Image (cartoon, rainbow, N blue to C red; front, side, top):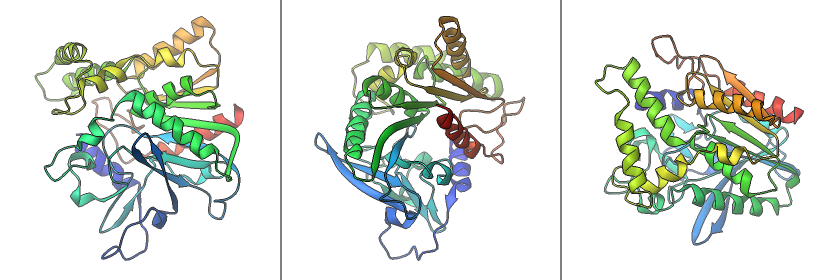
Length: 337
């Protein structure tokens, strides 16, 4: 199902660039991005900046978007053209911000989709995820690296430090939440499609949903055996079967622990058919009880993790694309906060 979703999503957000794609080097500039590089520890970090046409040098605040999981190149292309870097139209955000996104460690910035593996993930010559990525695919690595990137960007002449917005979706929401707790220069946080009780609760929820809707003999109980393995191997960096034990354990520490400490304005948005929805609802109820009033909650009724509508029998309607509406609401919220 994920394969089908990824293919449909990429087709929806396809941006066709009228250039000859054969026999030339593909560049981020072909999509209107600035490609910046900095160094974190010993790692070269690729950063893409999207600005309004003609306003590259105009001083505006940074809006950093932390993408979700999987070792995917930021820019993907095939014989039809380039695929969009962001899941939403960037024009509205670029009116008031320079929009930034950071690449995954040891994953190429740009790749032909025909060279990628399952779910458009980058694999090496042996068909495996690069070790450089697996060794760095950790919550604290992303948090510390991203903060260093923000410090680098804030020194640029075209950056206004009047505000600093960080948004994250899915895995990126956890990264963004912990960044906001760790870096006082962040003025607004957008927490999208996250699970405030941690990754493992989404894994369990997905197992329950599959047992409910899919033709499967599973019940969702299998995920608890996996969690026991993770807890017993929480420092393991073995990525033979996907994420390491340390990756899953660290991302399963409830982000609610970070969120509850924040004093800045926070927007929490989520689809009510997402397995994480009950935990966002719980956080909403709990914060009302505690009198925490710097949070705004926006629930997208009847939609799943990426805001596609879901029918009563669990079928997702990929023909209705809500990401632009979601991003437009972010801007409304930012104007009010």
